Length: 71
Image (cartoon, rainbow, N blue to C red; front, top):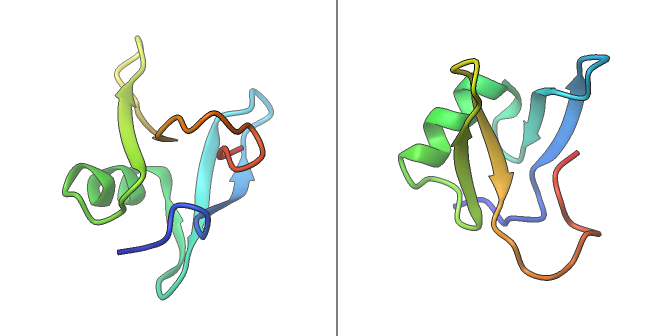
């Protein structure tokens, strides 16, 4: 399992939507790929959320610190 602090955002849209992530051992993956992996329990410390438009995003589980949030 990847460490929650090891996944980083590599690309985002002008709107701020994160689209690509660096996952250690995998390199760059898309939001959809990462969302599937998180849903399957492959990345401890993360969960998915469904946006009103139907897209699924990845978010880090809250821990009281803003320094290690995705984005």
